[in-house]
Length: 458
Ligand SMILES: [Zn+2]
Image 1 (cartoon, rainbow, N blue to C red):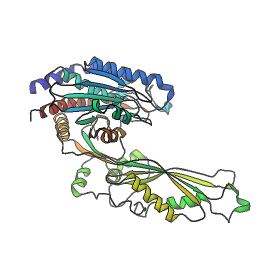
Image 2 (image 1 turned 90 degrees about the vertical axis):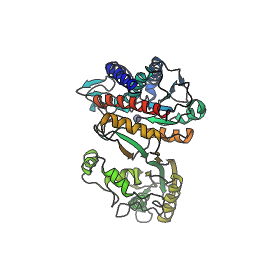
Image 3 (image 1 turned 45 degrees about the horizontal axis):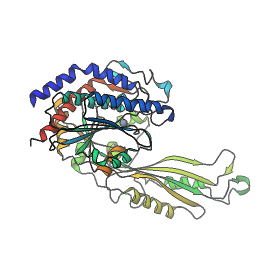
Image 4 (image 1 turned 60 degrees about the horizontal axis):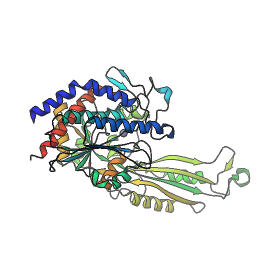
């Protein structure tokens, strides 16, 4: 295998320029999924991916239609059925580009400056898709590599609602795989490759509080009715204790306490307090005592009021007030149960002078991927072969919907990594891709695929 992998690595290196030219072309398509204005571009991007997978010489490439944007599917199956099957997940849609005036160049006219390629989608995640394509092309040279590959590239990751789960249900058999490779999770730093194994869950609800039946003249009624804004503010102020813990009874009942080994592992991740201060622009950090900022964002749950509405400037006592609440959940916390606890808390806390309704909006649990699998080993060894250091095993505070969809519908875990750096400005102006890191990423993927193929002989 050593000679084979060498020729694949050499092939990829001697074709970097062509791969990057292709990425350049892919980046010129303004595939912003959240906006109907870009409907044509969405189709263009899907066709572009299908054509590119077709050019790889896959056995089968097709667009799987959805009620929204199509999902691009492509497969390369090895006749030897004992080969592992890896699904390569990606999304061809990109985030919106506003505010446009903060971009130094046109987001859809990719622009190389120094080591970075600037453009919307360069890191998130057209560049990552092209790294996978380049690695598979380099691998395909060697027909004897025993591996089954299924590409699944969706077009609704950056905007809701995604129809990915419909596709997973409808094409269940076609998409069956041993696990999924998701390169949308990025890395900790240029010299610190990463494997993400946990994501926090999310529960969102809206709290409506109603006092008088209509807005009231504060001259005539000020002093006799309770103001819903005051009531809601008081409730919100009580959501956290003085030590920064969420005050809702039962909220922490199922939260697993962080152990020493985890704590040591997280302490090695280069994410100090100063970095949080710099990224947030806040003058001072806040949160649950007894945990580092990184621990608070990934292994501890959190609660935030993300929207507040009520009243007007006309001087009346408002009839109603509303707050949207978002909670980030950790493994074993059940979104429905947390919703019930919140509901009980509101019932106990609010005075009789108002009525209220807590509306459940969405909820999905946290994901914890088993790291003791041959796939994670294969990726660990691949990243170490290229970077010379073991990858950091990390957890992230946000969620990746596709990871949950694949687990729920196909029962498979996602191995999450990626080659975008923390300063890549994902979703912001001047998004960029660090080309030297991307090239190392292509090498690492080639190693990864060969490591997976080796599993068959074991
Ligand atoms: Zn993404």
